Length: 431
Image (cartoon, rainbow, N blue to C red; front, side, top):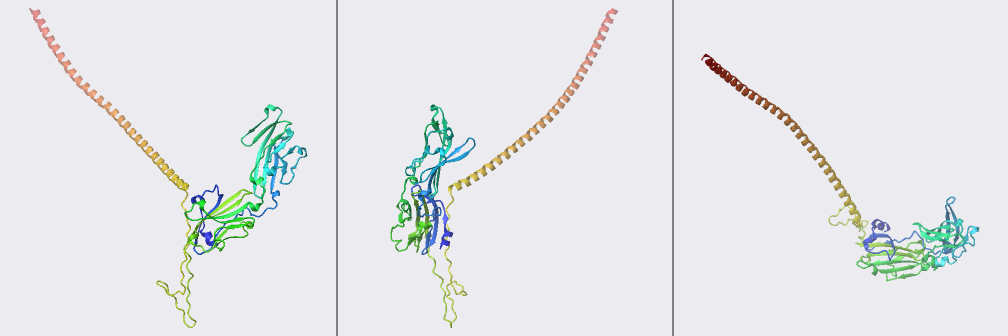
């Protein structure tokens, strides 16, 4: 059944179930599970990141230490002091003993500020306040830069974008703040009161805030079961859940009424851990009954049990078991927009290529037309000059003939007139 569950699990985003994780914890796992009715369901809820056992060495798990990074003459890191709950602070440089300290109540009020008396030029550098909780895997660091001056007017405090900068007067005292008042550092309760696990069930059509509580588990061994499901062994959780970190919920004899949303909540208030795992359980049709095998007496040959459309050559009637269908949710909306962007980009690229080809074709055609027009103009220009020359020659010929005829007529007239005059002169002379 575990293999069947693993093959039918489908992961998807928990936001599809319409539940907010801000108040209930961070959702670290979400699954769809489909199992046949009447089978056994195991809803896994493991926390391998932290095995929830009682920590009797809590004082050794919390540590604070201050370090100094010097830039002159070269970069070097120097441990100033460190401190654990119930242990006196340890100062590493004999020159700083009695001059540098942190409050004795640091682990009760969360104030780990570093106090430096009689500040000197050697105290300049970048200080880091480092808080570690190894059991809860917490590591925090705060940086402060300390500069010195000889003028009281130049004392100031400002933020340089990365860390706080203190400029203090030589010989004075300064407090480098490092405050962390999270319950992790201030509360000292027993861990069996801090670690809690519980299962909730939300039937179909029910709002998340109206979900039914199934069971509460505490690290001290206390269990609070709600409803008759756990006493009749319908549901169960391992007795050693906190020692092995396995809070899986087992549901036997699945029925359609068991479908819905199951959520496993893991809380460690001391360490600030809040995790949630959600399972959507869907119950399918029950498994078919086992196949029937009919055998005859030893003296009589076996007669197969024939059904309509059955092959009489087989002695065993086997029915195909229903297959578990994986539920595939539709793709995220962002994937649709991504595909749409690809399609639009391809369309615009094709349009751009077509536009370039069209413009180049038109330019080529225009150049061809201009060439033909210039060629025709050149031909017309040469032909026009020849016509004009021919016309001029023809006109010149015609005019020359006309002028020549007139000239001849005039000569004839003058000759006749001269003859007449000569005759008249002869007649006068004779008289």
